[in-house]
Length: 363
Image 1 (cartoon, helix red, strand yellow):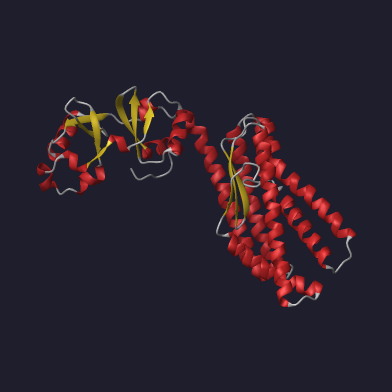
Image 2 (image 1 turned 45 degrees about the vertical axis):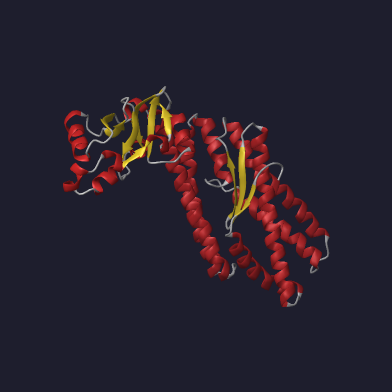
């Protein structure tokens, strides 16, 4: 739509079922419709809700595109939708405008639908349909305006703190912690509404799932901010493990003995071709799986992986570009190159240790 890829998650089926059933009973009571009519009205509410979310996300996508930020796509799912952008906003002002574009679209649609609802005769199908559109957009606008990540209001809060402190990472952490408070308040609020019989019990699990998703999204934002702050510390010259090569056909036991005696600790064991160039890396797990008594009779080639099958990263990349390369080609190990030469091996566990030094990693 408008050149933006649109995806529908299979969880939409569950949302359709829950809202159709919950809203159908309300619609039948208000309009005196037969059961089938109530379910059709409930389905209409789902469609209006999805349409509202889609227009909301298009607001984000088209505004981002206006500022030169690429849009990977829009996904509609159980808990609403989200827009994937190619990169972060370059300034607080752009961040603020992109984040508020969605709620602004919802607010305008909601205001128009409220006006139509007030103008139409009550207890009619047209009045009910207009009310659906009004409710959908008002709910989407108000909820997303709450000031905590991952909601749009949280992104606006991040933009404001970013502008005040000139520290995007600190702003993300602040908005993430506020998002956790919003998640807790949401959970407490929906439980209270259910106890007071202001919310149908069928909607309670869905709303608690919303609160849980908000909590997790806020936590991921805080973690992302802490990781991003350490990206400039990535230095491939220090992170890349050196390579110790042995000729093709060398017995595994002999190759390991030479490495332990001659190479620095942690060096990667490589297989060299006839010209002395590395062509494969020994897989540590495969080497460890060979019984010690068999290692003198197993060539390193049997437990090695060709370098052609591993992603590469140039030695001169800075932290931002290393992260971009890792995101583009996920893997456990990366061959570090300088021109046509292989100069080391980057283990993703070593990179993760730099970004999250307090987190335990399997190395």
